[in-house]
Amino acid sequence: MSHQHENTLPVPLGWKVLIKPNEPKQKTQGGIVIPSKAQDAEEYLTAHGEVLAMGELAYRDRETGDKWKSRNWPKVGDFITYGKYAGQKLIVNGKKYLLLNDDEVTAILPDGVKITSYLD
Image (tube, rainbow, N blue to C red; front, side, top):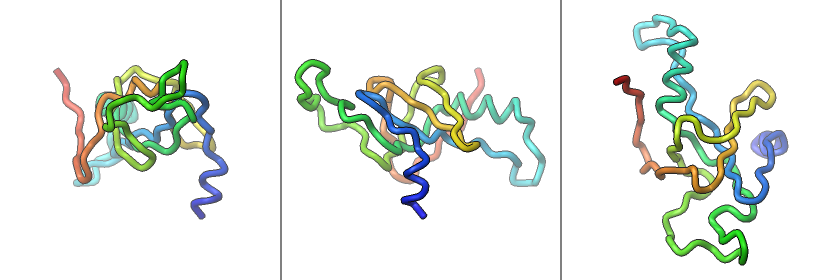
């Protein structure tokens, strides 16, 4: 089944990174439906998701193609954070995706870390 899923994903080019954004909760634990406006707020305030694919130049020097020096760059399958207004938002077959530049990824989340939104 995963092969079929992969064939429907946009293919990031160059230094783009394809992200599956966090899906906000639609109901509270008590079963109260959360309004879609609040869901959108949570989705963009939390601004994190899973790396699905990377372009061939991601985390490489734009001129030479050499890998960037640091070893702490995300890989496919990592959960990452990004700026809440970053990237190009796409909906493909009813699913939300985000195309980011490689330098718009702000952090790699350790396994099991959960992020929730906060309001000032």
